[in-house]
Length: 121
Image (cartoon, rainbow, N blue to C red; front, side, top):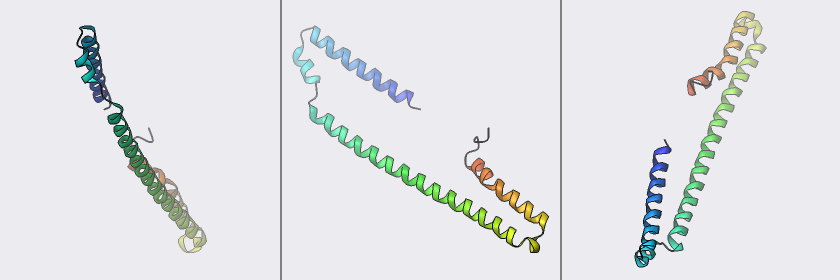
């Protein structure tokens, strides 16, 4: 997915570099000087790329934090239900309690497999 754009940018930069050197060697120094950019465009591009990277990093961290909170809520709910079945074992019954606890123990793994289908391969 990255190879195509990187390949095109590399080919374009190589072509521009070759054209610049050819202009210098053939005595067209004025054309070669017109091909050069000053430091201002580079600094503007660097600033905008820096802001873009900061924005993407912040949004990725927010998504990670939200996912971690949701996962923590799922685990806490599973633990709470397991505790409740242990406390009310005499009302629920031993076999049902064990079945509920096994299903709750498997639930986070099944959910992870549902979200990331190849995680158990």
